[in-house]
Length: 204
Ligand code: CDP
Image 1 (cartoon, rainbow, N blue to C red):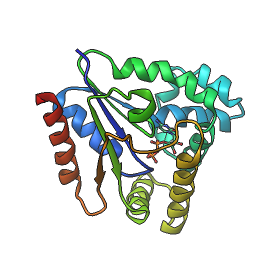
Image 2 (cartoon, rainbow, N blue to C red; image 1 turned 90 degrees about the vertical axis):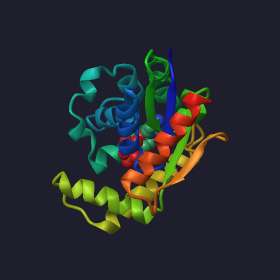
Image 3 (cartoon, protein in one colour; image 1 turned 180 degrees about the horizontal axis):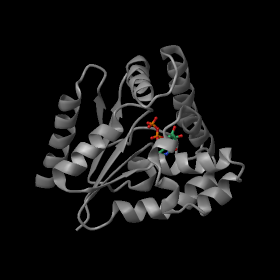
């Protein structure tokens, strides 16, 4: 039986942490769909045309997640993500993943609106741009990148604007999504709220 949890939201809102925790708690598979766009962005930076890159993507492109976590790749991801043919090339894989037996959690920007509008649970995880930039700064510094809060905040804001304003599958909360503003929440509290939403949908 399939059961889909769709988790959308802006950059560095905590979608990944919440998704991994929900997947572990319920034994669901997890797909970070941002990695698909990052992998296409990385190929584009290496000189490949974006649409061809999306059509040629293989699991090997996701084998080194650290190489996909850089700020340059994030920026490239949001540039290729505005191209409808890139999004179309990644659609079937995501839909099949969402409906796999045993349950799935997908996090991204358009999971509850475009990829899986029939998802049993939809969350829109957000936080203020400042809080998100601080969280991303910590991750980048821990991974050994040299950067500062001002740079990260500007990157996060410009990527959010591009993601929300594009014509094809813009980032937005589905009408029936539960919005979780994690600005003032710790990880445990945010995860508990997400777990409660899944439990309510499983019972109901
Ligand atoms: O980790 P972070 O939240 O910063 O970004 P991500 O989820 O890895 O996504 C990187 C970029 O891919 C986003 O800024 C979007 O432009 C794009 N993306 C998308 O368009 N649709 C998705 N379902 C997931 C990511």
